[in-house]
Amino acid sequence: MIRSMTGFARAETTTPQGQLLWEVRSINHRYLEVQLKLPDFCRPLETDLRQLATSQLGRGRVEASLSLRPAEGRAPAARLNVPLVRQLAGHLHAVAGELRSAAAVSPLDVLRWPGVLEQEEQDPTALFPLVLQSFETVVTDLNGARSREGARIHDMLERRLTEIEANVAAVVVRLPTVLARIRERMAERITALGVPADPDRLELEIVLLAQKLDVSEELDRLTAHLAEFRDNVRSGEPVGRRLDFLIQELNREANTLASKSADAETTRHAVDTKVLIEQIREQVQNVE
Image 1: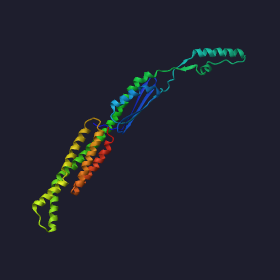
Image 2: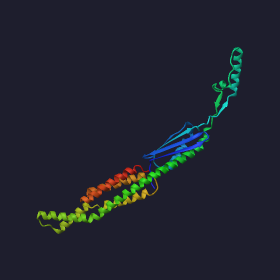
Image 3: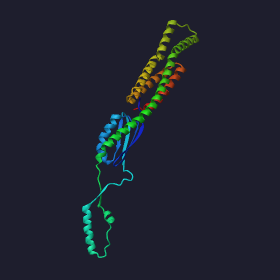
Image 4: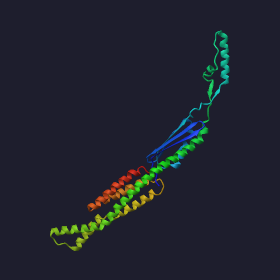
């Protein structure tokens, strides 16, 4: 089953240091382009994250952002700077000796002094396995979203392919009628001229004209391209570029069919086919 290049996924992971939140979105692009927006502590993982994305995604412009939100209600760990407290105590004692009316200093005042409470540094590398694991999860979810969109595109493509095949079949059935009508028109023109016609020469001219207007090869190629297109759609591989090439070939044959058309009915089928091909082209631009 084909996959779309458009999708969005979000994954949140609880860690001792807070909530890891991944948001990944992808849009159409000719190749695979991965853009990562990471916190500074995750920069060492950038290469590994790119490789993981490349291993699971075929095409598309992928934008992935990671944020770390501290857990609500969780006070950051801190430790007391004992040497600084002792130094401050000595200074306070000296000040109290100099000032007879000095007020007592509250321990809370000491705790507010810059540097008395030091934030404990946490090792960011402890989060690396969770960052990689959650990224793999969100990329899998993204592929799920792209697959669901791809299923909708697949259904649309199948309907359009069936309609094109119906147009081709209608033109094939009509070919003998068109050739017979060409023979009648030529005979009518000769009769209108009022001159005798050599039957052999008339037959030769009819054959030459029929060859000029014959669209059998175009119909055969259209049928072959449609079969190949359907095989690629069902392959389950990233086939967007291949489908885009086949669209060009289908359009070329449809244009030739329209230019060679010798009656209004065949022209209508050719124009309808071109419209359907254009609708397919619009959807194929979104296929991985």
